[in-house]
Length: 89
Image (cartoon, one colour):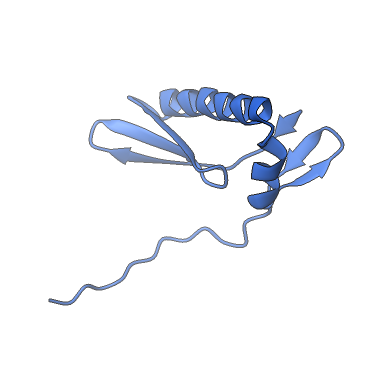
């Protein structure tokens, strides 16, 4: 079974954080590549654990995934944006 996912990577201090947004799984590393690799392992372990618990399909369906044959397709993003808000005293 294949599960696709979109990854965001950003820097926090000396570390890079990788986030599989729809699955809400995160990991980090000292470089973007190492954060991505750590996230790949974390996503794999998350999905294996969910499958063993019998909840993998439920998790993916709740996140908006659609199953096509032996592949779970993530919902398409309409937009990924950077926004801000003002805080007043």
